Figure 1: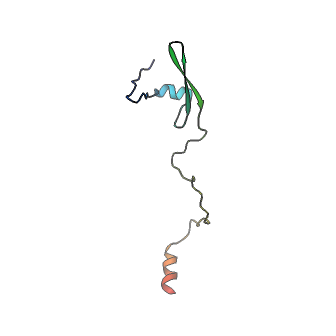
Figure 2 (figure 1 turned 120 degrees about the vertical axis):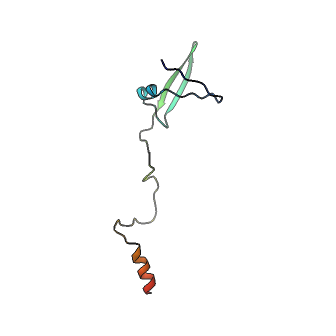
Length: 81
């Protein structure tokens, strides 16, 4: 059995082994129930996808620029006009 300390804000860290067994990760919703003289923690929901990088989260109204685009070509166009 793992033991943890309650902070001054009433927060505790759920031990890693417990989080792993229950599938608790960032964004998970949990519920606490007082049953007799103890507390039960129930996992209400777990996010389906964990986004680490944020890549692709924002959408642009502008058309995409091709990967072989050469920004130097803009400089050449402006200087020749």
